[in-house]
Length: 457
Image 1 (tube, rainbow, N blue to C red):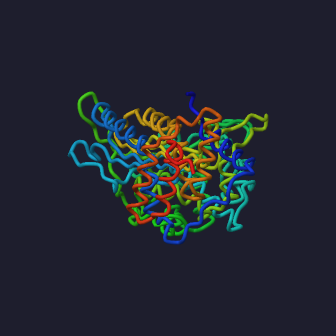
Image 2 (image 1 turned 30 degrees about the horizontal axis):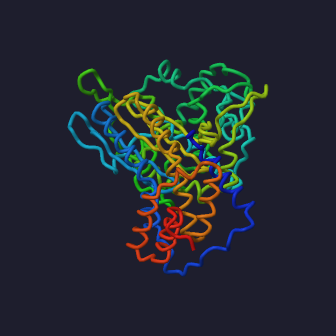
Image 3 (image 1 turned 120 degrees about the vertical axis):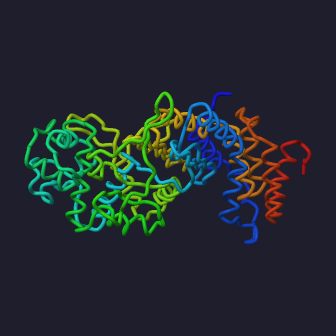
């Protein structure tokens, strides 16, 4: 059978209930039948068992054959169902990767810089349409707005070129040094602000400097106060060679050679932050992912704007929001970012409508992250049996077996009933019995009996 995309399944599910006047009101469950958050997680793993087995096999191949070193986390329907630490954090010393391994996130950092700007917007301290020179008056690029920098439509010159050509000091420059070089050397802008999209690391360094000017804090201090500490992201920080309170705790980056690995030494371009520089763990990034559904620290209204494209002056759509790239997969919006920097490769992909998430962190320069993400994406979004069985189980557990069976009859009429996994429903029933949810277990058992033709009452 052709795969039934998740959104089509959801629409079919919704239309069924909206148009079915014969549905009963459902079974009432007392408070003792309510699942705890841990029980919900375990139930979700049962309903995702085929996906989990596929993910485990996939990571075995990438670790044992392809040489993947790093961390992978997958959430389905908002629940973390798969997490794996593979290979070595330091392949030269054979130090293993763990869930606590801290990575430099490279350009995945941009979403945190954008979040800092959004928080200042919610505080009433700036507007997205404000000109950057209102806050950094020496910047020689009038007409560039905060929004332009967020969307990469500002046209600022490349700061890496400035460092390579003009920076001769024996320490790495910081954000203010980049501003000073932009002022001193006045390289021409690439284009009129808003007229084109051109991915700009300089723009996000300038945004970080703007945050620091407005708040009087370093970017690290501001993010610690407003995001990392409130959310419990205890192993996340902005790295700064000049700030002893944010010293290096992350693993090193390596370059994979034909035989073995070479440790990559940090360059002077590692000094500026905002475009990169945030260091974190796979667990902390999952905390951040879940926080983006909660309305704290960023409101849903701000996130709707952050997850929306912009248009250039000519009307061409730019698939980049505030610190997030934008695309679709199976008609579902994906907000994501990838990062590459000095041996580190990071991928943070979110599917807000289905609450699915893929996070991959790697510190050995291997170019398999994108391939791995694509494989994981296909696995978690292309399992019609699990999608339909999940819907059936959810109905029985929330509304009772009769409504679940009505939905089964609807699936039967539309040629989808063969996708219901009876064995998986039986596993759900056994789990309900094990956790003392006997009424819910009974609803699942009654549903199974009715589907199998054993119960005609």
